[in-house]
Every structure is written in C-alpha cells, then in structure tokens.
Amino acid sequence: MDKFLVFSLSIDDQAFIEKYRGPKNEASLLKKVPVAELIRARKILNSIGIKHRTKYRGPRYHSIYTTLKKDATAVSLYYK
Image (cartoon, rainbow, N blue to C red):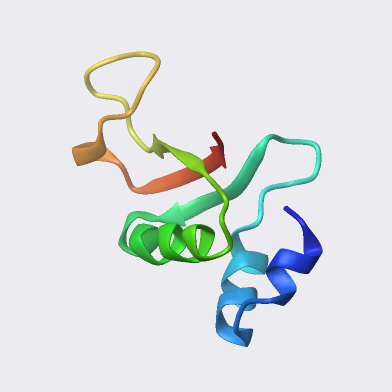
C-alpha cells in the first residue's frame, strides 16, 4: 500500500492500517481484521481509492477451501 495514501488518512485510520497491515512478502492489504471491523476497513480503503476484494477467514465447516461469511471470525483484504 502506498505510504503517501496512508499518510493522507486520520491518525486513527493510520493506526488501524498499521495494526492489520499484511506482511510485505504477501499479497494481502490487510490481514486478520475482525469481522466486526470489516465495514471500517472497507470505508478506509474506499476513501483512498483502493479497490479490494474480501476473503473470509475462520473455521471451514462446509468446504475444505473456503470459509463462509456466516462462519468467519476474521477477513483478509486484497487488491482487486
């Protein structure tokens, strides 16, 4: 994620991004964001013009590959 875009955010939003930022060697923008914070994460990314997709993370009761939204405990956000 571009440092200049993050710098344009409020201090609270910058702290949020730093807390959940994905590692540099991975493709994720934000990682292990609690489902309760998903709306805030989306608003922040939309405010700086980053298009993203959401992958739900948590237990997999119905498939070996994906977690359903209703079962998710966290999310990861990726560039679209």
